[in-house]
Length: 116
Length: 113
Image (cartoon, rainbow over the protein chains, first blue to last red):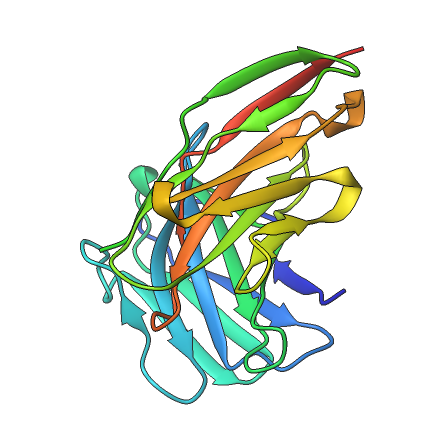
């Protein structure tokens, strides 16, 4: 099946620094990628939808200036958490959709961000 | 707006018991429905999906789900669970005209050997 990778898998940073998370579709082209946040024992919360070559669409309540998303190619999207604070500590998961073939979302393994 | 409700937060079963996890959704149009599984320490994987056609869909590892349109439900079933089915299960809905999926809160399944 299709594979989505994320890098890094785990990152610890100091408060005030920025962190970049990469999401790659390894064996298919992903016109659309999604970024989710998952809190412990809770569901996935969609943060934004990213379309290749255009601006991301952010969900209500998600600060677009804080969570910068770039989808520069059909296989790569990045999420940058700017000026991170402890409350940004979470599990960030990306997902890629192989539109139009299959129309199924494939999920990355996630990135655990800890902000000290 | 679309929403998903999973009624069972934590289910504990013995091996060989039958499983049914409830999922109800709210959406004012045609939907695509999904069940995902997240094994401990692993990423989300698709178990099965319904787009159209036969409302009884079969997925991997012996799981199946039935779409009942009149009840806005998409319950997940397995006749005989195994210890290896211990995982978190998420139901998701996506409007056919929408690009994004909405996930339920998840159900933790623990299967005792």
